[in-house]
Length: 239
Image 1: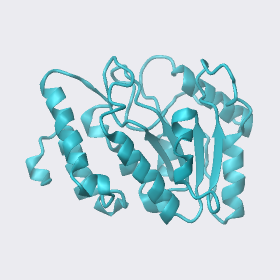
Image 2: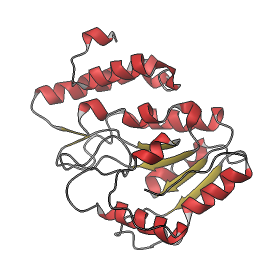
Image 3: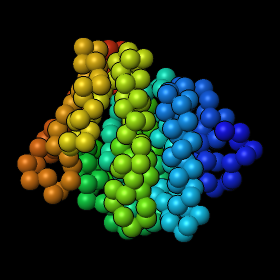
């Protein structure tokens, strides 16, 4: 799609921006973008917006995870499910929160584990952009939802992109820590070459997880120890 043909503030515009400004990110050569599937989804989303539907995150931030973390810089992957549905909360990064209310429950569990694992003080916010800029790919299983509705776009076609991204990271990066939390994320484990990558699986950080098999899993220190042993700069997880 020609960037000049995409309306500013549309998902098609965000897609054109990714293809032009971030053409060297390593993502736009994936079949999802080359086959026209990305254009189909962008067009469908723009049609929803034209009918009055509001998207989370806002259209300009739909591909934010891929923009902030190019393929060549990926050292860790955290997969979420879909964006926070309340207006103003989501900004294109899995689990990351920029809203004005209290930090969402699942993110509170993540940040509590972070502090317990690393012995760092609790952060005063839930914005995980700093992780993304260090090479932590924070990708949701669905890049969009409708404001006020969780899971609205889980069957829109985003799954193909997520599968291709995980497979590309596994194939092209030398040493990556994959943090797979919950059934949705863990379903991607077969796409990862565990002979060269670290795969840390646990339950979802949701407080509704009755098994409570996320607290105490120490994913952050385990990932850093493994990366350091392979000569990869560890992630500064502190926020």
